[in-house]
Image (cartoon, rainbow over all chains, first blue to last red; front, side):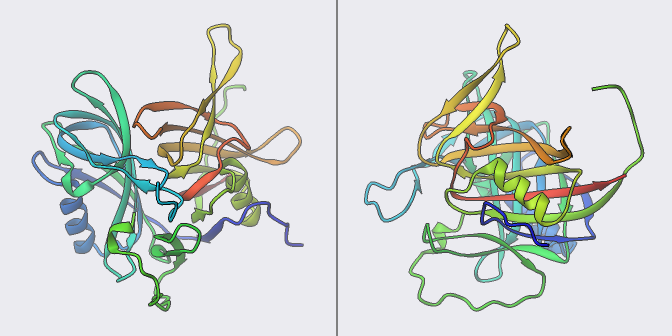
Length: 181
Length: 130
């Protein structure tokens, strides 16, 4: 008998995964490298376990309540960071609502003054430093994350779905691509 | 816990997302119940919480809770595992690092019922079989 669950969590389970170890060299953008390598190896959905290392620069965001009350929460101004030590980061790689690659990544950084901070990383602007950066990738080919409208927040967020499934795009959703996190 | 080692193999992989106001640890246990996963690794996840209650151990060896407040407390990283407890029920033990609205960082074990989801949480879980 199906057990009644107390939460509304959406989940899909499948056998089959591919594991990759990705090294990102000094001077490279995390997003540029991930996108290029994943395209080359046909990785369309994956979990990224980003190891610690040195970043030459980074941008991260933290959330706060929307003063206009239109959204549950929104991101504040970008926090620009120079040299920093990345302690760890986690990423989910999937597709945006236009079927283009999208990386959602949060990380924890220690600044030059010893302050530890973190939030949503703009991986395009995360430039790898002298240590290089190693990423352990768990890729799935039968299930993937695709950004779809979340009715509660009005934002496009990752939902699990079977690979190859084509869903209708919500034409009426007046949310810019900037809201895809 | 006694020292032991046994061979295992990887089973299924689960991709999941949580919805607003659902509890992080309870939701994780629900995923395991839904897919009948009794042993596994929460490889990682990220997203936001309205607040988070984290358990840490004091110098006296007594656990205490840190309450991280603020809308959209970000999960920076988390990991954990799934197992059966002494009563045979599925139990998730989940640890992580979170940041408040100012980007200040806190860490500990997520207390069941203490971390309601703000917008979303995305998770990958890996089943391990004996």
